[in-house]
Image (cartoon, rainbow, N blue to C red; front, side, top):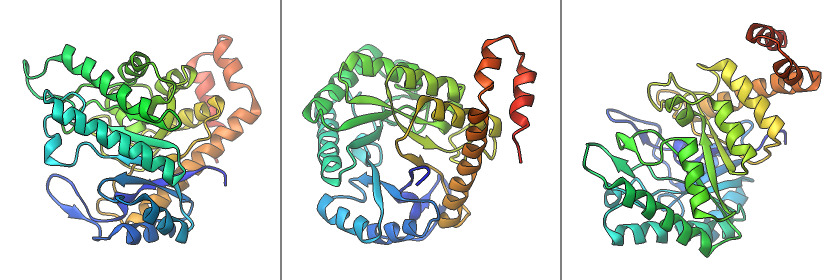
Length: 321
C-alpha cells in the first residue's frame, strides 16, 4: 500500500450545509460498505458518538469489509450542549463532559487498534467582543486536554485547529497556537492534526506549517482538502492550490510522514464514492511528482544555494507529465 488513505465515515452518508442536504441516509455499516468500494481507500476515520457507540461491534463491521481505522474522531461540536464551547466553556460541567468524551474516545481508539484520537474544538471561541475570557478559556483548554491525555498515555490525542466556523473566532485557530497549547500540556501523546483546508483558511503556507509541526514532533495526523482561502470548502486537494499541494507532498516525504492521510472532502453535489476516488487519484499524482523531485535530489540544494524562485519553480514544473 503506497499511502494509507482514509475517509471520514460521515461523508459517505447524509450530509448538509447551511441551506441544502446531500447524499444518501446510511447507517454505520452502510457507510463502511460504501467506503470499502472507494478505489485507493483502506480505512476510515470513525466518529464518536454519532457513528460508534460500541467499539467491539464497530471493529467487527470494519473487519468484515477489510477496512482499517485511521483514527477515532471525537465530536464535541455537533450537539446542542456544545453551543458555547467544550474545553473553553464557562460551565465546568460542560468542560467535564468534554473531558469525558475525550477519555472515552481514547479508550475506544485503543480497542479499535488505531491508537489515535482526532478532535476539533470548533465551538471553542467567540463571536463578539467581551464574550469570552480568553485567559480563563486558554488555561481551561490546557487543563482539559492534559486531564484527558494523561488518562491514556498509550494513545495519541491529535488536536485540529481552525480559524473560524461555527465560531466566528476560533480559540485555537492556527498551527502555532495549537502547538503552543501542546507544549503547555506537556505530554508526549498530545499533538496536532494539520487540516490543509484550515491552514489555507488561516492564510498559512501549508508546507511551512507542516514543516514546523513535523520538526517539533507535534505532527500527528493529516486531513487533505482544498479551498479558495475564503472558507472551509473541503474540495478535492490540488484542484485549487495545485503547486502548494505538490510542495506539501514533497515535505510530507522529506519529513518521513507515514501515518494515515484522511480525505476530509465534502461531496456536496457529487457522488461520495467518486469524489473520494478523485481525492486519492489527485493525491497519488501529486505524490508521484514529489517522488520524482526527491529522487532527482536537486531541489533543496537549489533552494539553499542561491537559486531564485523561478529557477526552482521551473525546475519542479519540468516534472509535470
